[in-house]
Length: 241
Image (cartoon, rainbow, N blue to C red):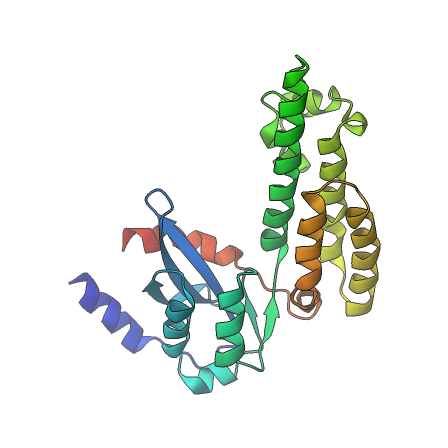
């Protein structure tokens, strides 16, 4: 019955005017099983879902969107996973690929957390618990801190910690997304990139280089301000199916 309902829904969907799409994935269980999802960014609707997160699955996913509609796409939001990029360039070569704040924040947060974990280990070896239970202070948006978290952060003497420097580099990247012109965004990135790659923080340097490799996708956000944020609201519905 569920499969018939999905089939009827797909038959009735109208893809006329599809200009902006997003590619995303959803994990199930303990994170070992994935489905790939293509959605309409403007109308906030799922277009199709296929099992697994592979290049072949992504090709299958794009094949569910008629060629005429694929060729009408202006841009596609996605993360930096290479099979997504390759499949999209083949399916809709004219569409710009856009990487948004969520994808970049995830990359930078991983780097900050690696710095924290290594420094925490070194400090504990000296009998110091400075970074105990501070993980989410470094990963959470400061605007969402509670008063207690803010007080804890201010007591850390952040400027003396490696993770403090990593956190500052991560936070300094945020204004990049406010740029509305490619030239100003590129200049901002170049200044930030120099700082990040001269930080002497091993986890931060490769993260910055990853963003550099995907810079065209970051700069594309100045022209097409699309994200996969809407897909997060549909993930629960997909999981039910």
